[in-house]
Structure formats: structure tokens, C-alpha cells
Image 1: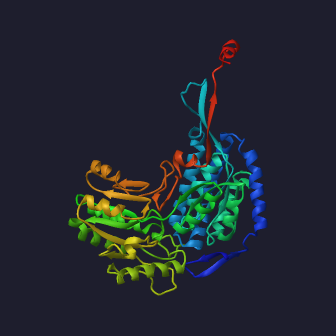
Image 2 (image 1 turned 90 degrees about the vertical axis):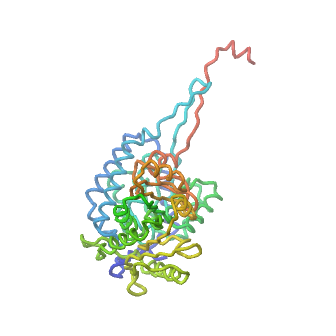
Image 3 (image 1 turned 90 degrees about the horizontal axis):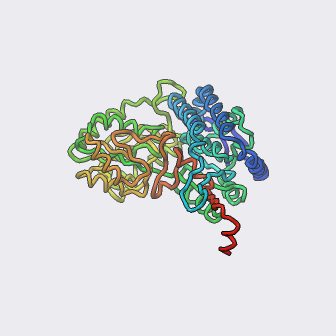
Length: 466
């Protein structure tokens, strides 16, 4: 399998790498397994010092790292720097809070003392995607390393330089090299790694099929998994919403990372009285976004990460139109085989169309008409995905009540869906299971061990009992 940096803006291969053999991969796994024995005994204070240094290095190298993302997957450098800064924030967050999150939890029982201890489990394998090459990894690595685990990263094959740059940051921060390694391997070795007893758990962010395959392999080995898979987030606009604000935010929410985000808003469910106004305003905002060279500071969105992804998105749009959808904003590719994809709006979307059923991983806004708030919730939940969603209304308390009815891992009222270290992140239904970030994320890959210390008994009393 090719491990190469392909620049989607220029169409050129920047660098090629030789994929690791199983022999080399197994050697790195053995080193990680040995390193865990010592790393797990280190103090939280020691780990926190290293993690804070990693945060410093991320900030110091943000320009260089943003440039790598621009070259490897087309992210504008402005967005790339923001991503790196978010990674640094998360490293600092777990450096500060990990010890508290994993402190012993006293439980009142008949024992002299009983408590839950949170203990590291060992080597955690992370299978990560290309769309947020640093953020996706750090939100696994920071809590895993702070918990006393060690990490092996199998990154997407089109962002190898990002993978190696992050490995270098952790090593330069002072983490023992074997505690975090990037494996330049193809998908073919993932199952072999999961089947190895030295790998204790797997976390994957990626597609539904990839998640199903990893979960099946891990299930046969009785191993814990966390899966963050696809999303087709609902963006619900009620008739009493601030339509201008909702439309402007909707355009931003659809254009996150050129639309290549699991939590980008994808299905815009609009109450009938404000439908026409919303579509007109969103269209104007989408047209205002500036495409261009990802290395240009003025660029607001770049190409999709690969030409084949743009080709597939084009096919989804064309099939949906043949099935009855209407193109309200014409964008898309200029010609097949190119990676730049301009925004598209689809209306008259109905069940049975690809636009209704599938995730569109790019800047295509799918408009659905709702009769009322109850119908909007029905449409939002009529999806096999359940990652995020948002509700727009001037009545915040009503928005909160409706948010409880949306089948998703996160629902935002009058705000765009986003991830942050303080709040748990993950989905339900086909969007996966388990949580990243917050105190829940760091507890996914620990042994939550019950420890019971019996009350002391006097020998005479014990004898009578016997």
C-alpha cells in the first residue's frame, strides 16, 4: 500500500515512504509493551510536566505543522494553526486534570475501606483519519499517556508527515520514545496488531465499514474499542429562530474543513415558514467563502483531501438529483479527477435518495422541510447516524427540551457543534460508541478496579465465627 504525501491542490506527490514490514512493526510493539511496565509507575506530576512541554512545542511549531496539513490534505494554514492550538490546549487540560479524573473513588460499604482504582491497561492502538491529522490523534494520545498507557498510532496513509511530526513532538517533549510511536503501515497489518495479546485496546475514528471491521476483530479477541464513525448532523431551524444568525452559522458549520468533518452540519431541517428565507441567506453566505491555495492566508477553504473523494461526492449529488432532489446552488467539481469542490445546496430531498440516507463528506448542504418542531425532531432522528446536532430557536428552554429528544452524542442550542476538551465527544447508533475528551475520555482505557479492605476482626471473634 502506498504511504505518500499527495498534495490535493497541486496534484503532486510531495514525499513517499516505505511501509513498515510486520517484523519492524512487531519490534516497535514489543518496545511499547516493555515501556509500559515502567511508564505506568511514573507519577502524574512527571507525566504532566512532559505533557505541558508537548503543548509548548505544539505552539512553537504551529506554523510548520499547519503547512504540513496544507500540503498533505489541503487544510488552509489559518485553520491548521487553530487545530494545533486546540491540540496544545488539550495537552494542557489533561496535564492539569488527569490526576483528579483518575483519583481513587471512595465507595461506602460494610468494608473498612472500599474504593475504585483507575489503572492503566497497556498498549492502546489508535487508527486515525486524515481530516484533522493532529487533533484526532491528540485527543486520544493526551489522555492515554496521562493515564499511564502507551500509544501506537496507525495514521491515514495520506498524512505520514503529520504522523511523524507528532511523534517527534512527544519525543522532544521528553516522553520515552517507545511510549508513543507512529506506525507507517497499511490497513493490512491492523488486524494482526489487534490480534496480538500485547495490544490491549483500540480506538478508531473513521468510516462505518472500517469501524465495523476493527470492532469485529477486537471483539473476537475480547478487547475494548472506542469508535467515532460517520455523522450526518441535523441543523434544526425553528420558525422563531434568528434566521440571519442561523443561516450564517449554518454556512460555517457546513464548510468546516471544506465540509470534511464528522460533526459538520449536513442536514438542514427548516420549519416551513422560514424555509425560503433561510435557503436564500445560507446560499449568499456559502457563495462568500473564498477557495484557494491552502498555503495562502486569505484562503477560507481548500480542495478535498483527494480527487477520488470529490469524484464520489459528485456521484452522490448526481444520483440524488436523478432520484428527485433539486440543485439550489450549483457548485461541485470543475471537472472529474480534480479535488476542489465548491459548495452545493440540495432541496426537495426525500427518503430513498442518497442525499437523505447517506453522509456527504464535503460541502453539500441538504435541505429538509419540517412542518413543525415535532416533525423536525422526527426528521433529525430518521438517520442511522447520531453524532451531533443543533437547534436554533429564540426560546432557549424550549431548545433544551427538544435537544433531549435528538438521538445524538451532542446537541447544541443556538450554537455550532464543536468539540472541546471539557465535554465528552462521541456518538450513538452507526456513529459509534464510547467517548473521547473530558473525564469520560480518560476513563475509557483504564481498569476500573474495585478494591475492598475488610474490617479488622479480633482473633476471639474470628474463632467464634469459625
